[in-house]
Amino acid sequence: MKRLSFPCAGISLAGLLLALSSTMSCAQDAMPIRIVGSLDLSGPASDLGEQSLAGIQFAIDSLNKHGGVLGRPVTFDKQDNGTNPQRAINQASALVQPGASLLLSPTSSGSTIAVSKMVSGKLKVPMCVAISAAEEITMKDYQPYVFSMAPTTYMLMRAVTTRLAKQSYKRYALLVPDYAGGRSAATRFKAFLKEMNPQAQIVVEEYPKLGAIDYTASINKILAAKPDYVWAQIYGADLVTFSKQANALGFFKQINNHFMTVVDANTLKILGDDAPLGTEAYQYAPFNYLEKTPHAKDFVSQFKAHTGNYPSDWASVGYDCVMTWAQAVTTAKSTQSDAVMRAIETNAFDLLRGKVRFGQYDHEAEVPVYIGKMVKSAQYGQPVLDIDEVVAASITRPSKAVVEEARK
View (cartoon, rainbow, N blue to C red):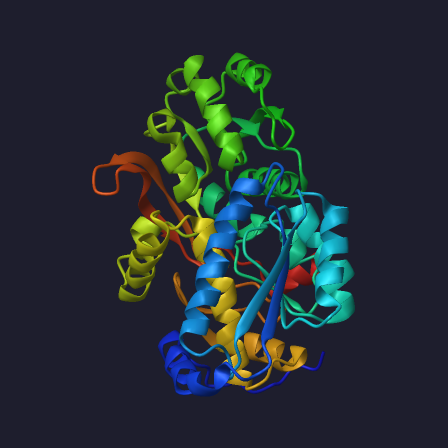
């Protein structure tokens, strides 16, 4: 794909909605623009997939309410891949064949990498990654029609280890689900920790399967190793299962709450009294922090009024996927794949997380990582992450040289 060498002006989200409103009268008569996706709506990652779907649908409804995109209504066709990579490939391919302007990626990193290579790259259909964090998506296995709204494992682990390296912890335990994104995160965590804190050592590593139902053995192994700190990549339904079992065994008390994992608003709500308050965590898009800005506050308010729930991180990033694509199409004045990807490469976009650009060499969004401690919130009626550090992409993003080395 040929890259333009000059910058473009771009279009704000407010400008996008104004442009859409001006074309509302003719949108109903125009041929629809198809968005498609093979999503994880059952299986181990189903809770993330369902939350992402809520954000995607909210974005599409909002676009159509304002006249669609380029005066055309937007439709969405989806299938449930059951968190199965081969099924995701087959479904995405079948969905794209009749024509699609945007392909939304699966949730599981393994499925996303497969669909990126076998469908988006081969058929030259823009694919937005909302949740999958494996760095291989935009580094080793990059192809020019993918763009990612999710901080990668490289970015997440750079943020996490930069924070932990400032502390006196020396003995670390790892608790990571055994799948592509988990293994990628663990590899980066160990490499960055060694770089930033050479005295630190990994005393035990546990890799339970994604969707595990019994963490007792892992909990006991970690406690027996007597770590100073436990870093985990347990999330979603797995975190709920783990936390209940860990609380029953007094795990968090025994490690003095020296624990960190990735969370989202919906999981924190489900955890309720089982949330390990006082432990650290990181998030993609915490609604309680983002709503400090007018744009995000309006989204949070409308989403809650429409669904009855505060938006999960996965809903917010799914929303950002669709709205960023719509801004790119409006800027390019075309749904043609190369024109849209040129717009992605050369413009800044209004996200719920602020104004963001994408790297020209990896199409990775320059988004921050949010870190804080779990607390009860009377305001929201559920546990939330009290954000005390926002790690900018300027600190976490891999350089072009690092990315190119990964592709060799």
